[in-house]
Image (cartoon, rainbow, N blue to C red; front, side, top):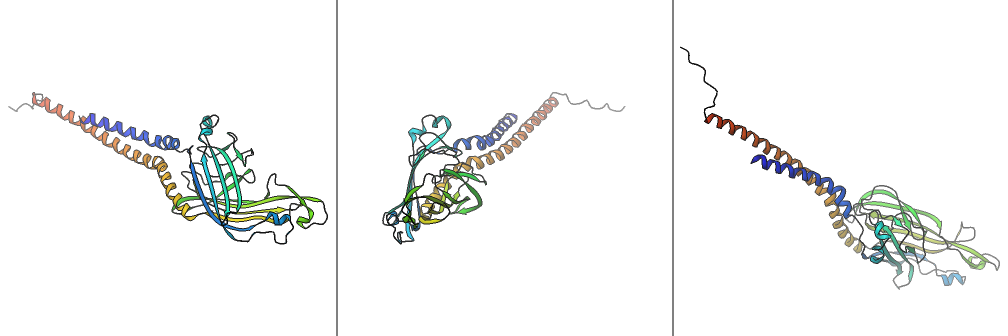
Length: 343
């Protein structure tokens, strides 16, 4: 009986040893995919340091700006487009399609910036794809790099190229450090975007509008710089918090001298919203780490222990049979003969 039990225990041990890598390298990665039917709202707060009043600017006013340093709220609504995501090519390529609308407004309701986008991205790696009606502001673009609202699952400590919807290209997000943020272990990534001309931003204005002599029209362009900091939970790739320091200006025909500041904004996640997100993200990370770390470790340890116990049971069962057989032989007079007695 011990040999039978030992064999069963050894078999269970080997099953657990198989489960350990299966859980880490198959079950966990299979479960780590972005959902198709998301419906979320993110909230940020900040300050509009400076904003150009275009009406005053066009009229040549001496001070063409709104009042400075106004508190502002940044809101982004993101909805998964399930219909587009469940049709080819998105379905066959493992893509999710999200529609998102973002706006920044001051307390009186005046909108400072607003944008609409549709992104198609790989559900595991967050790499953007050019399909499924993806667009920026209703216009097609040559998408590249990461989906700007989520890093890949199992984010690494490396530099990633992340899409910038203003410049219509990807920009480097450099890993800076690992740190706890709102009680969540995160990787901190920073994108320092130098002054760059915004594509298709040229406009024609009278020379007098920018203080130049003559009556002819001149061409000016919009320029953009930003510092974006993202705190990313690495297991899920979810962005816990994001901060930005945006500066958008107008430059004259020489494209070297700023002639006006369109908007200067500093913003970050609203603390209450980030705290709520931290709770949800920790729960999501725990589910992934359960199959990535906890289950494989427990399965490995228990598997080794069961194999050792099973081997000992199997071995002791074999010895018991030998002892029983020896006892049976003695009982039927098969003991070794006694030496002859001396005369």
